[in-house]
Figure 1 (cartoon, rainbow, N blue to C red):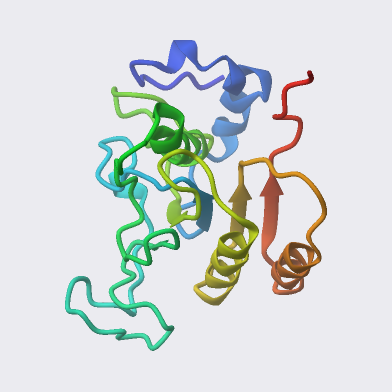
Figure 2 (figure 1 turned 60 degrees about the vertical axis):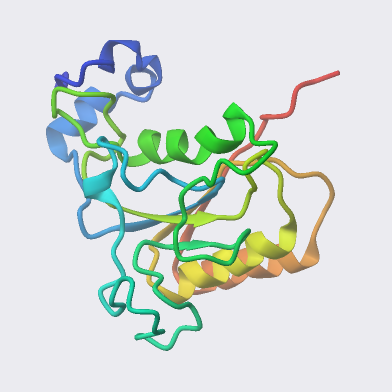
Length: 199
């Protein structure tokens, strides 16, 4: 069983629960797999994530143009649907809270933090392409319309997997339709369940 040398790996009890060490003996990376992290934003400069952040090869970063004509200017690493900006990182806007600014980065780390690099944590995949799509504000709140836009962006820009780690209440036909569009496009959609606290 493989045990990576990441400094905080010993505290990652979830990886042992899913048998990650045995799986890593077969495969530990998926460098060609883009994974959309639809959440509160991702720190694209985080030392354990920066080498695994998706790059839109059809876009020239920072030139102020929509090079790939996908409707998003300079979306080299993803998109912030809250502030309509190409930087998908948390913004630390007034009223931010710890969960709001950290959640997406934590989720991204669980998915694909660089593994066996003697630092931080190990992701389930040690190498992948994390596509950060910020749909929650810095308080961790958001609405269905932005989720739908992010799902459609992920489909259009080549994501193989879309991760939705947030909660919501009630049924949304439009969100259901967006998830079906992803499914029909061959994209795997992974969603959180059971995060609500019972009263």
